[in-house]
Structure formats: structure tokens, C-alpha cells
Length: 95
Figure 1 (cartoon, rainbow, N blue to C red):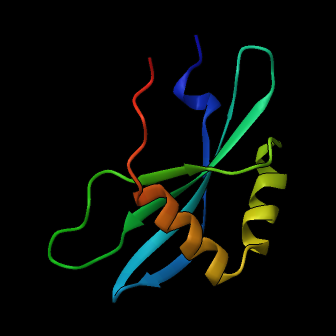
Figure 2: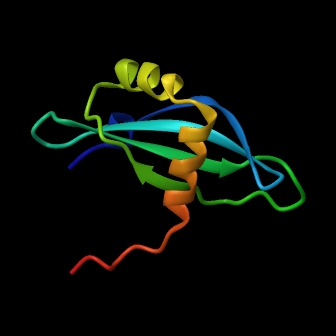
């Protein structure tokens, strides 16, 4: 079983979507075989009622934390916003 210490989250920056600020983070988490899985997390920033839960979407790379941070920082605002919008879409349930 993985410990929470195995999950590494690093802040990339902030994007503005439809007038709302969102902090953008990259999460890196190893599986039991030592393969890394990465995702972007979007947390609503500030405002009267900041969201407690993040919107999450996977990315195509599977790299260790430092490399994931570099790749995530290379994404432009438009790419980050597109990933944010993908995270908003409903997903089919896992069976």
C-alpha cells in the first residue's frame, strides 16, 4: 500500500478561467511497480467560497516528480485551460 508521502504535488502557477482564478498543481504518484503517474490539479483560488476539492485530469507523460514539474511548466496557458475544461467533463463510471 502506498503511503501519502509517496504522492508529490508541486504548484505550477495560476490560470484565469471565466473570471475565476485557479491554482494549477502537478501530482506525481508511483504505483507498486515503481512507474510514475502524473496529473494536473486545479484548485479554485480565493473568492468567497474556494472549492475544497480539486478538479483533476491525467496527462500523457509518466515521469518522476522533478521532470513532471518541468513538463507542466512548459504547458502554455491555453493548454492548461484546455486540460482544466477536460477535467470538468463528466466521466464514465469505472466498472
